[in-house]
Image (cartoon, rainbow, N blue to C red):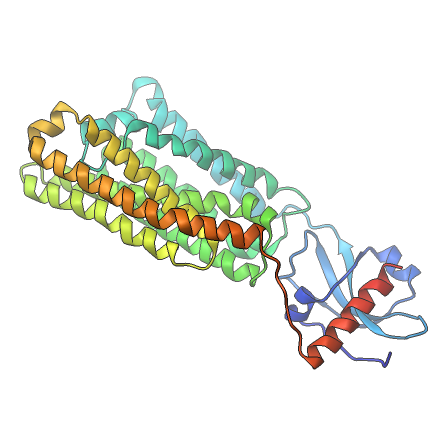
Length: 369
């Protein structure tokens, strides 16, 4: 096979077969180093130096080798994620759930005082359990040597998770002390941070697909982002109700607006090619069911303020949204499942691409002999 000079770039490194070696193995193979430089955005667990190396075999061909320098250490970002999450959990439970042993009202007690027509049923809030469990899994997993330096964490998540934890902590404190405008600002900024985090992850992955990375480092944030979008609409209605207690028409308009805006958000993500984004409309469907369930048995407070006719009209509207969203989500989900798990992907290469592919496969086999 003729000798080829191949410049190792970020794109070629992501697509070229490789073998991970330590320094001793590299010396045993008699590799002549042609180029050496750091490449930060490779999807590997450890910090490694990327080189183009010459194998002293009969073909004398150049192949792409990844030579390990030293294992990546836990850095400041990894520790910051842990610290911020612990603070978030302590405040969320100590203040939001426990109420500092009765010193302040809990989030549930405050929400019941300022109940709106689109406040979901109490059981709908149990979605925080999978959110917190999966985020706890992320916080632990990102400390492992295998994952800690991956681009999806270092470049993708970056400081967005830290900011989100701080904002969630502020949301809990402001809400329990009934500073609703401040808590609304925290909720909206949390939505922006989580959306930025997901977009940053998408850019860091550079089109790669890893189910392991998705379930460990992306699923929790999709779930969290979707629920925070719901909370933003509910919280906006709560703020308007609190500041316009004498204007029922304004309160009613905010309830309808908050409920209606969730449907186009769900439809937007239904149209995305990435099937994993279906988590977002699924969470919105969950919230719609929670809203309809609560209106099925409305409190005396809501009936006194709005009347049976208004409550019934909104309840039927929410059930209609449920039917529409379920009709759109069901087939889309089945198509995604079939495409992901029951489709054979066939790639047709041109003549030049075939030569390159043959070279890469041959190099890969030679390395593993």
